[in-house]
Image (cartoon, rainbow, N blue to C red):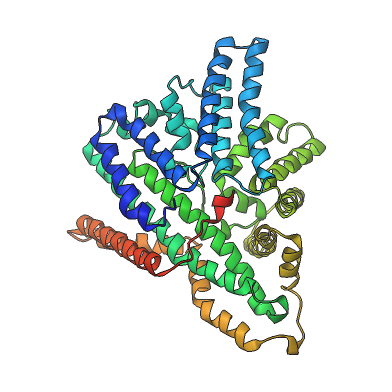
Length: 467
């Protein structure tokens, strides 16, 4: 089931919220678990059994791991709790059909097992509690990657809306903020990502000999922006839904396209994935504490796994390894350039944009041949007689508006303008009420626009569902 679907917006979500808040607090985990399983089974009726089997295995293995402690059997159960989900993940990565969201819930299960072993979180003795954490539908199929410590208090009933902390007013404010965040994410997905996706589809079916350089660069920008608004929009919806239900999910994006280097870009893009690899792979391997060669090896391993996490195809592997090389090169250059100024920041930003545009074409194509053709098209000037300027020009002119909107929307400018506007309104006598009213009007307008698009349109994929 898609968040950006009429079924979810007008049937599943209202029913979930209604039952979640009408039942006693002790029964909320059960409601969430049941609705989350229904949500997943809507699109994956077969593979829901796989997910439930992994949850049951993790529950049993961590209990025995905890009971046996540092004895050999305890270490064996710990190893199994980590390896079993990864074995299943890589098994399905090399099959034609990949269960939706398996990469995300695998990382959640593994992080829970590791954190219990390290003593970072308490063992969840309730099977329902662990199952609620893993199956939690707002972030189940496409993230952000939520760790158990992020939601433990709410699941255990000691915090958030499940516990005694906070009053009804706080709950209402949290719910309202979550609803607005969800609708903003929905608009990013439906009104921007989907339209950009239509442009990407239009150009992708056009032979490379029919694309001019301008259209090729516009296509590369559309690929990047579509992926950004698609995934960040989903993350916003997930965070908003979590807040509506009393949870606080971690942020996943922080305007990555304003970064001044590739390394900064990756600190801003899919932050929960980067944090997962940092805490559970990079640091345990030694990080940068064991010499330059070992550090380079660790970076290479992390980015090779990052590529494989996205898919078992060669384009993902090369995509990941290319960033490993670039990050190492950036580190070396940073040691040479001690001071940063306006010019170094500008050059760094231009370089970052160029690298992302090129490498995301590699990420976008499952076939290496297609990726090379797209990248070569950025530089190749086709013969004049080989270009249908009418088609190429029409595609570019017809979609330049959404590209401009996408570029502006990928910066903090819209949020800053809205904040300035709200600050000016709030300075008036009835400012607080007016701001709240404007937010409600804005949210309703977004909902109506998105609904109209969903009823009329047919292009509505979520790109990260394939991971």
